[in-house]
Length: 174
Image 1: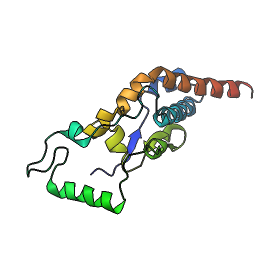
Image 2 (image 1 turned 180 degrees about the vertical axis):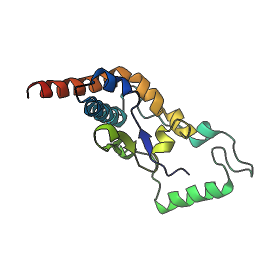
Image 3 (image 1 turned 90 degrees about the horizontal axis):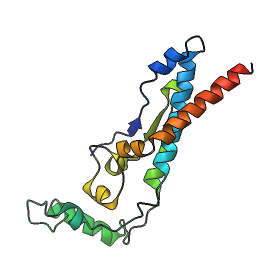
Image 4 (image 1 turned 135 degrees about the horizontal axis):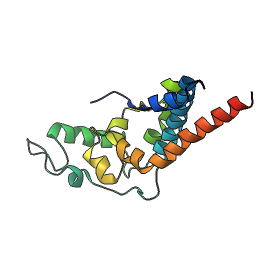
């Protein structure tokens, strides 16, 4: 069970530093990085209307995966008994209701060139992770991080550009 947070770093800002030589290029690149990280957080927090919650059973998401005869959707009888006991104790509620907790956990960590978008919710890798997303979350319609960033790439680029323009304009006024 991965306990690593999801983290998105901005790369390729060497060109920005080169283009802005003599104009505090390193600081300007940091401003871009922070602007991009802030927009990535905004994008990742959104729960788009085009993928509303749809019920997907464990059985349809996972199929027959047990080696010990557990019902479809469960990897073992032990897992099945654990889930049923959790239901009986009220620890799992049905029907499931989205709370926004995992999406809401996105935040910017660090400042300027150290800024990155992170989500340290324990469930984040299973919901958004490129290699760790669960089959169930994929079937429900959650996008993996790379797909989300590609879909909103222009918006994220525009945010970085706007941050840079604002920084340059503020320096010109001095």
